[in-house]
Length: 310
Image (cartoon, rainbow, N blue to C red; front, side, top):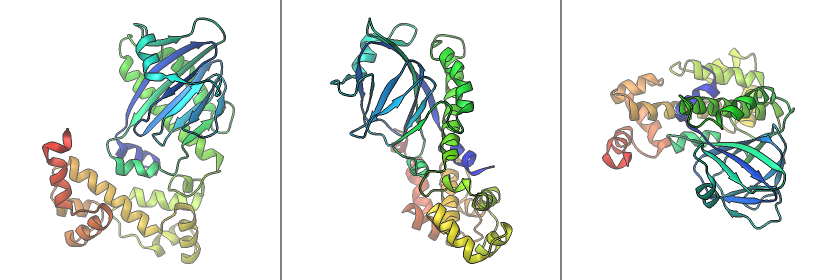
């Protein structure tokens, strides 16, 4: 499995195509802070989106955006207008078909939006390299598939009461997330992180090797040899692109997988240790505590307690 699929699987994404707004006239609408991520697209017309006090980004028909830092944000036609409360707009103007219609005269803007929440904040941090707002303009590199999804978003965002609407909308939102990230990767103008590093063929190959056989006793020499680089050149490039050494990255990824197993599988700690490449549960426990801040047994007890599910 490729690293992006691995991490999206571990995130256990709950995706919701949560709203369609049809707004007429000049407007500015503020929404409160949220957990994890939100996305939006312009089906018809144009609007701006602004995160907190950052500069507004202007969006045209077919543009997509992803909000990633959980801060309040504003959308509308005019960033100089005093914004109204978005939650109040939704409460007062949502029709029985699930569409929010706001304003009676003026130019029409139609937008669809959704949210992504993740089961585990620790794993969500693996996407922390993303900027607070990812803007994918129509026609930009990597946006072709997003453009093909726009008719489906138009259809599903207006079909809240149709049979299977929840499943269809959730699956569609997942596709949007994957293709926004792919389009962001296609730019190449990003900082360090495991996903930006996937744009480098040799570093991508070594990441895929680690993810493909996490139990193998990987060494820097083995990884460098596998991708046709010298040990020194490989270490320098990996640290430069990913922000961690190869073995630090591997250890962190193993501990994420181990935490998932401890939460969701009935395996002994020794079995979990073996599943992520440790022949000694003592060595595994030391590494787990260093990365996760607690021992494997304490971690499992915490997640098994009634409080952890409330």
